[in-house]
Image (cartoon, rainbow, N blue to C red; front, side, top):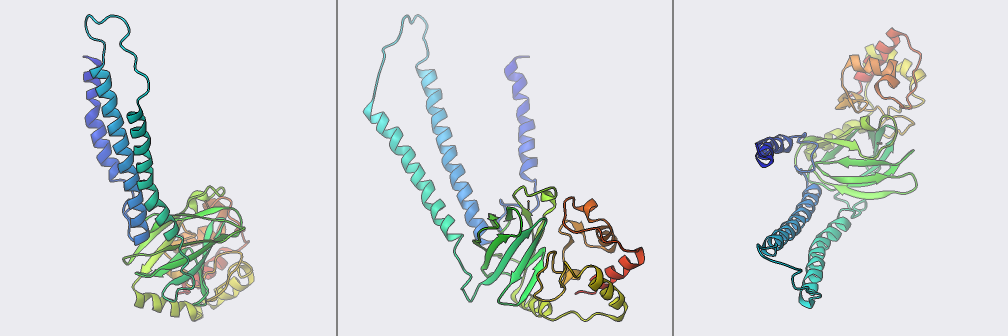
Length: 332
Ligand code: CUA
């Protein structure tokens, strides 16, 4: 079998792979399936750059093929063909066209780059959130609403979410692919960015900057709610949770063993995540399924679940852990 024929047999394989890979990915974690205006505009930038690059590749390859076929050595041709040097028209053409293409690419890129860092913090219609990245979790503070939370960034749909991003330790990168591109979080500066979600959903967020042993486990969620549900959530977060009688013992233990790091009050900021509203969070520690068994495992040995976490292994008896779990589950 000729080599050509052998190679052609690979074509169906590539075709199948293209279909398979194109279907890859989580719809709530994909920059190719935008769910808000910022992500849509950024996808437009990707499309326009790919289109321009494709145009260049196609034209260059077409010319290249044309030239090697049209000017190939013919039968009976002897000696070196006529040598040509310099052609003003061609030189101008291949200088001007790339400049024009770069302008076409630059205008929307510069426009949207500045647009997406518009500072909406002072905007009365926007929701202001201060994002602080920690090894390996996310803190979300809503200064105007007097609440703070961790791991789940809860937002209303259809509103600009004015983000001010910083870091408590090393450089991380805030990334919610379905809603918008990455933004670094640094210790020495505050970066401004905004996002907006069109629909009610839970979007996955990631840390996109290698920041330590558990970088890959530094996940978070963006939960978009209808305005009414968001307002109810805010009111609920502003109201300290009533502790049921059977969770009182756990509350006491929590105060003794955990409160040094974890706040449980509307505004509280601590060394560790504020656990106010813990029971309603999507995940546990950002990556574990939210259930009692995982919570016990997590409290008993955080390092085993998230290597490098700053949460210490607190000496606790099994029954003490059970009480604390009962208490945390009451924080709705
Ligand atoms: Cu934080 Cu990677």
